[in-house]
Image (cartoon, rainbow, N blue to C red):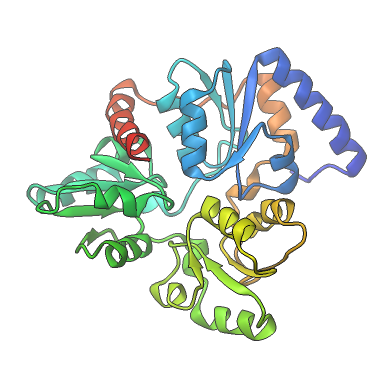
Length: 309
């Protein structure tokens, strides 16, 4: 679907506001969404912030502008609410690297292990887990676990390597990665530094270890936002999905922000458009449902994460 023109977008935004009021809905959007989608959202945040919002929101309908696992988490944490995902095909290649049956089989090979699952995973995989984490709290989650128990970290191997280095714990890692963050290379960082020598480098912990080694700051999207706001520096190279540049520019209008590479685009995150948000509210679909048995087990893992955070 093509994006609307400027005049059409104004009209669509007004229709969204009207439908949102009629449906008693709230719109939650991830930082990687298109700028115009972020602008119509009631709340924009990272995965942890969106989970907290979904757990405590008072609206009857949650419109989740993100990808499928985020909408599943919203439904798990607010089962009595209607959760709409404007683009049903918005998935996550990282989440697809782990299936529930595979996690069960891997657990059997590591007796007594604690399964820590990154939020970028299906509800079925979360249901096989002891606790969920996000990029912003993964180190804190692992540090909270008994030191004498082995830990299986699912599904992002790069994030797991970062957590292992930060905690000093040997983790059993899943062989998965974020296709966007994994493509960022150390050479990309060196070229960006050469082009902008005055800039500090911020990268996401889903990046490769050699990329992380070159960074001035490593953190999730919410952490990057705080770091850029609080830092006295006036220029930053941003090593995460390009959608993060928009909220950074809004929060730091006096600072220069440069993408670490031109290819850092999550196609799934960009599938959501204003037209699809309007249609979802109008038609009350696509609705996200989670099997009650799966949801109950996954909820425990998500709630344990929220208790630590």
